[in-house]
Image: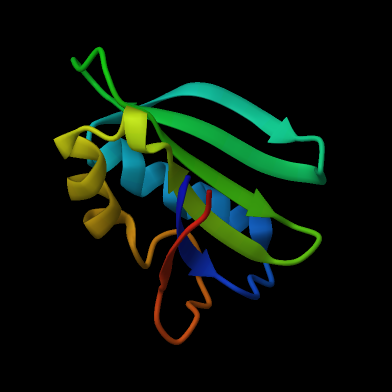
Length: 107
């Protein structure tokens, strides 16, 4: 799984998630799953797909407990629109942006 950090200390998680959703919609991304992750109670967890595309999934998670937000994708679900979208979404997952978004890869 590839992870792109958006925010390390969002003080208003609802506003951060709303801002991310608005930007995703502007980029013609549709929410195909709107849920939470059990390991992050109260979290916002979205699966996004480019409208008109059948393949690819970009995930967004906002954990209000820690104030962290991140995007992630699985290598087998990465289509060209995923990488393009990530670049356009950086800076929109958190109102109080961390110094520099960083990427990491986990097995």
